[in-house]
Amino acid sequence: MGGDSPVGRGRAAFKAGGLLLFIVGALAAMRLTPVLDSLTPEALRRGLDGFGPWGPLLFVLLYAAGVCLFIPGTLLTGLGAALFGPWWGFVYVWCGAMLGASGAFWIGRSLGRDFAAAVIGERLIKYDQALERNGLATVLYLRLIYFPFTAMNFGMGLTRVRFADYLLGTGLGILVGTFVFTFFIGTLEKVWASGAWEELLSGKVLFSLALFVGSFFIPRLVRRIRS
Image 1 (cartoon, one colour):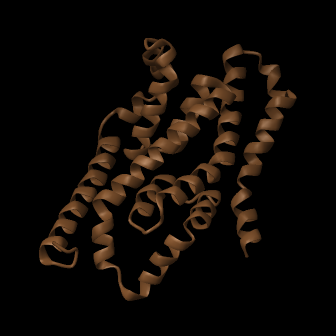
Image 2: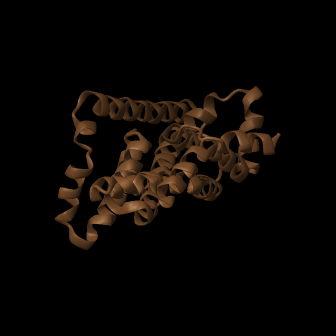
């Protein structure tokens, strides 16, 4: 059956309904259950310690699942930095974010793309086609200006952007922001754990603070360069 047939349109609408139910269910689970309250460094550390060297891999998978379930990325990133420090925390957080972004993209692509293509109007189709041609640049730009992470993951799946362009644009676009945030949180966590409060005035802490504050100017700088 063709996508323009009644059966094709019905199948597309059915899958889109499944996507909507998935999103509503994920949001409801996060808001109406104690999942978020249980996501603390202490609780995760106790759970991951039991897996030994596989603990980091489990964290990456949990991060990816959290992205698909609309758990705030800042919370997940902060947990990674607190658990693994500024350097390994960055590696595991970036890997988890990439895996989660890929998963959310394919959920949106598999369940919602057919419906989006069926209802898109003539006035919008040129933008859909432009995304296919210029996907890498578009994704990279939106990531650099801190477009809402999870919403963009699912939303890009509804467009014609190529997965390879989406993946590369995401990987490059979140690199700086992820490093800055994990470096900042991981550095402060080390000071907190050691109790050496005089370290708050150390060069490393001040440098991480400068990076963190400076990261908020990245979107403005990117917009200026683009214009």
